Image (tube, rainbow, N blue to C red; front, side, top):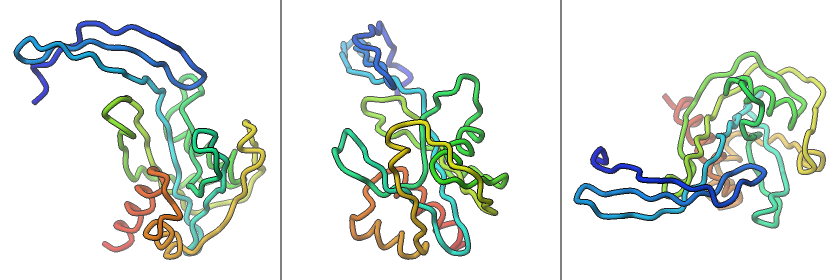
Length: 180
């Protein structure tokens, strides 16, 4: 399915700080023309950091939402040539002041396949060791790191306290690993 679609053209309308906003034209199986907005994104990584039954979360201001959200540490792939697992470790360090050489890929997902190619890779980090946090953005400078019992974090998902998709997915995939 989908193999009979083909891209006819794609034009960049705006190149931003993180994403590129394009307009693309596709041809359907019977010659139908589809015009779509497409957001190109470099991709992202996120980390479910677990330590002694607790998960490490960050309260971080998110400008698009104009509020603080409770999330797992995460960030975009913005270092040229950096492997995803290395980016995950870097983000864990920058945001939490923790490090781990024990990272396991949990899941990958497309954030919103209807309009963006963004792919997020979520890693599980265990055997955490303290290090110095290295905030590189204004939001990171003001985030708060909190430790929450893993089951409480799952309750936060069910109660709508945690609404961030990568955090919901990361916590639920981690739970499914621990349950099996």
